[in-house]
Length: 239
Ligand SMILES: [Zn+2]
Image (tube, rainbow, N blue to C red; front, side, top):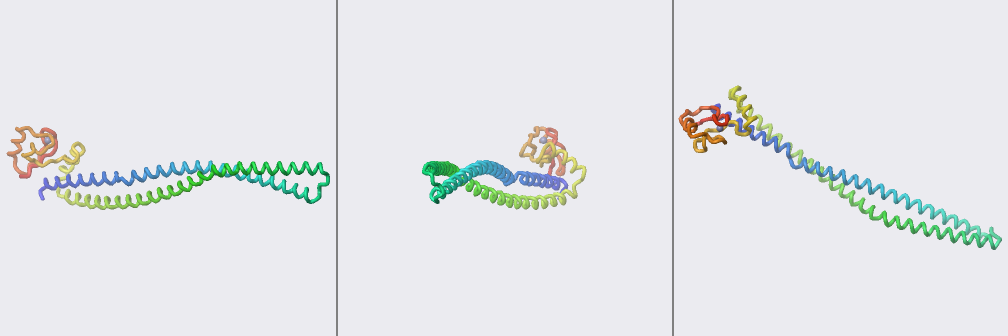
């Protein structure tokens, strides 16, 4: 293989290496993972807020139930005294009967309030169950994406290592100064730092050669490697 052909192959492989690196760094799974994790964070934040509201309501509900139960116990207690013969005065009995009635009415009122809170709590509980399910879905999705990402990264890394090894082998016989010249040109000209002379494509450079320059190149021998006078790229003539 001629040195010129080797240099062109080095460029071709460098282009492949750049594409593989770009693919590796821009795998779609990485963005999807970040997006899904963001969603999970807001799901968790929403759930934490709902949980706090729900727990607060539940505490209030339990307090009301405890108070109602307390009133009922007191009413029961008075009931026992009233019918157990401990109260002998009819006046006292009337007062106690009224008290029992009042305590039971208060207990019923508290029960109603507790029931209202339960009605408020129920949809919050349901929403939290749904959020939990969604959270599970998100976690499963992240796990799948991470597995896919690792798989794709692995494939690209293998391909990259193979291409880099091939590039090293092909670059081996090329003169170091020429490789260095090419490396510097690549910074400016990217994937087409060196071009093949082509009389049918205005010389082969992205910037068309002048008619005079084109004519001069047509008469140069195969194996010529020169900088293009118009753009500075390396132009290689093969035949
Ligand atoms: Zn040029």
